[in-house]
Image 1 (cartoon, rainbow, N blue to C red):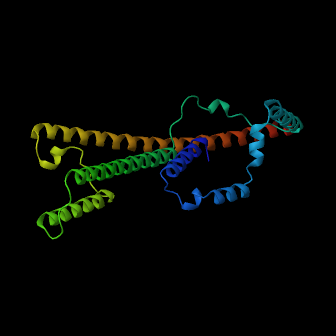
Image 2 (image 1 turned 90 degrees about the vertical axis):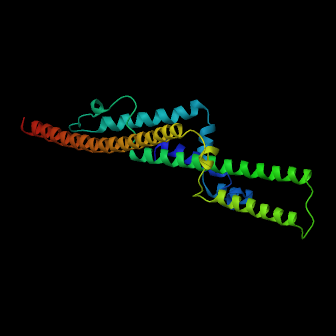
Amino acid sequence: MDDHEVRGRWKSFIGKWNRKELAEGWYDPETFARITSNNPVAPQARRASMPRDEVREPMNNREDRESEDDEDDYGPLLPGSDHTRRSGPGIPTLQDLSLRAELAEEDKQASIADLREARKADRALQKERLEDLVPRAEAGTRERMLEKRAAVADKMRSFRDKSPDAMEVKDERELMGGGDSLDEYKKAKEREQRRKTEREIRREEIERAKREEVEEKKRAWREREEGTVSMLRELARQRFG
């Protein structure tokens, strides 16, 4: 698992933690302490808290041991592959694109959830203000029946907002059918063109990532073949002159 995927998964975990979407056990201090005691992360924490000189010394010793091991090796060496390594930003892989789409979808769902909560809080506030201004009608009267119908309508509206397939109305004119028809047609065409462009960009990114994976496999295969041929040639030269 590379650093990019680790950061993405950590960001997703933190987002779900803040939105309280995880299981209740994650928010229990005793459960968290038990998981922490069972997970041996103390050596890593101690290593992170060590001074730089103490950390650098084992690294230097390890490099010395590796250099000594390299000196003990014998026989022909395989050709290096540093000349085939590309510099600069690389093409995103299919895993990177999938992770990016997942994070974008989580951000979108979080924004929708925040909007729904804000609307719900605003409706509750407006209802409280209305009850303060206008007293509740007496039971059995027509006014009381109208109030009950309004309460049922508010409850159904809240259920409709919670539905995942609920359509978000961004402009009141779209609901009422008002506004200039030509202007609305132009805006609809622009939105459709934007969606088409985004789909084409995503398709091109996926195709480019697939081509890059194929090219990477070809390069790795050629490097292995060249290394094998070079090793055989060197062995033949050493044995037969």
